[in-house]
Image (cartoon, rainbow, N blue to C red; front, side, top):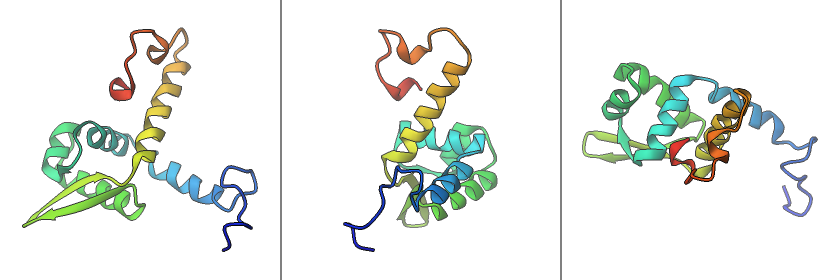
Length: 124
């Protein structure tokens, strides 16, 4: 498709709306959110290390990672027999941070991310 004739990705009639729904569907799982947060905080991690961090069995984490990889949310690097996972780009990290910020708003009061001492999303 010619870039000059493409509709804006953020308009209501965008061809990307259905794909965005698929992204949200992929992120509609607490374990996957925890995986993304762990990768955000630690960079590349193995399945076993991710399993330790998120408190789930390695086979379960591996299945979630396979889905995230198919959705191009995570990417892999192989070192010998070990596979390390990392976030594909900054967008999943930002989506999760914004979702957590929205969750903080739903609790009422002034969310933590609006406090002057809030130093960034690393605490999200």
